[in-house]
Amino acid sequence: MSCEVSLPEAKKVAIFGGTHGNEMSGVTLVNLWLKNRAEIRRSGVEVQPFITNPRAVEKCTRYIDIDLNRAFTPENLSKREAEDHPYEIKRALEINRIFGPKGSSDAYDVIFDLHNTTSNMGCTLILESSQDHLNLQMVHYIKQAVAPMTCSVLVNEHPFLQYSTSRSVAKHPIGLEVGPQPQGVLRSNIFQSMRLILRHALDFIELFNGGMEFPPCTVDVYQVTERVDYPRDTNGNITAMVHPNLQDCDWEPLNPGDPMFLTFDGRTVEYKGGNTVYPTFINEAAYYEKQQAFVITKRGTLIARQIKVSKM
Amino acid sequence: MSCEVSLPEAKKVAIFGGTHGNEMSGVTLVNLWLKNRAEIRRSGVEVQPFITNPRAVEKCTRYIDIDLNRAFTPENLSKREAEDHPYEIKRALEINRIFGPKGSSDAYDVIFDLHNTTSNMGCTLILESSQDHLNLQMVHYIKQAVAPMTCSVLVNEHPFLQYSTSRSVAKHPIGLEVGPQPQGVLRSNIFQSMRLILRHALDFIELFNGGMEFPPCTVDVYQVTERVDYPRDTNGNITAMVHPNLQDCDWEPLNPGDPMFLTFDGRTVEYKGGNTVYPTFINEAAYYEKQQAFVITKRGTLIARQIKVSKM
Ligand SMILES: [Zn+2]
Ligand SMILES: [Zn+2]
Image (cartoon, rainbow over the protein chains, first blue to last red):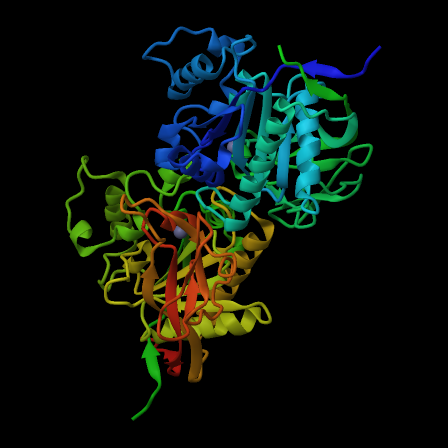
């Protein structure tokens, strides 16, 4: 049995910005690239920059009616295009028509979806499958290319915590989340990190399409296991903040007994879990409305099989 | 000639939160105090916590129709209360009726207006007059009380850069701006700094009303002199970011020739002014729409005269 995987060329690639309209690095990069594609041009690939939620971008808000990055459910995508849907459902149908259909052979090969977070996560690549060997090889390539800068890999294939992202219409969806950056703000360091990662990602695709073989490797990842909400009173009002010892400590170990929240009356709430975990998306602005103070992950190592392009 | 100023008691004090609905420290503190006033109770003072823009707070957005903190103009405040005004104008009329009328003897004595910024400004007290000896003595008291923590004082009485704040309905308006904190996020360190300053401010008022004399003193301040916009192309689109050397350097000297912006194509734009200045509100999220990358200030020292209460 050969462990090498032959995969078709990644000919159709899209870069999404503005899936959340107030996440300025992706919005700014995609708008730059729409004006001048020189930087994202690679031989043998069609690279399409695209603003996914233009109305939200114009208002500099996360979304107009509903969160676009949760809207690509089978139920929504089976709706007929009509006037009376919420704006983001109409937009999801359009995006699915242009870049999908999701799950079909016509779908785009790779979609990079550019996000910012208010959390201190640094650069994070987000995968939706631990079995996607093209994406695993790509994140391995990127991690090596940007070293000594760190680029974490978050895998969200949790049975009910996974959500239906904009990028999920592609065969190989990949999210890029860079922070900390406040909503509505463009910070040069965050902008430059995102730009650098995208360049390396496109280089990888060009090399892969050109016939380079990528030997088997391992990728250290964080896997989503749980969401943690803020402490609340009986009316549902938040009664505590992320504890100063946890704030900005994304990806650092949280041990049983470690401080997790600080209540408004000064009491510390400790982590009661059974073993060490790795929190991330700590105190993300957009997740207050999702009743989420942070996400808990566990560490793991994934195996990427050797890949090479199968020219037909 | 005596240099002592006799001032009436500060009997009516308000604490405004939510003048901008996504600045979470003030919103959270005022909501806490509305439920339990023990912490803000002082003898001989009526202290009124108040959410100024409840609809913006509910939507976790800066404002609904227009910026409430620019709405207290003579023109707006002379309008008749009517249904067809923008929401914040209606609200300004209401606030002026409850806490003003602005400029009248019936107006509240002191209004603290609680704000957050995405800029790295630390704790900043904002004054609207360099002649307000009660406020100058108060900020002097607060600065000493919180030392070694720093509390900067920003004076905005610039002839056309001053704006018509919510707190301006009071006889002694005082803004408190604490950052860095992203919009929609509550950080424990920022929350606790704001809470501490408010406690000392109320202590000061209690001491003053109780007859304590405050000897003459000086207060080091930063005075607003100029606004600086982002570089833009001929279509008005932003073409550069705050330079990494300037980002997060609020209150630090900016010298002629220092880097100010970094264009998207990698060029540095230098500060061309004639002398050293002190930038603040650097890369504040809410000021993109106001065409403002940062505010330039100059350093100065104000003299606060001796004050004591005049009991009638
Ligand atoms: Zn996002
Ligand atoms: Zn504000």
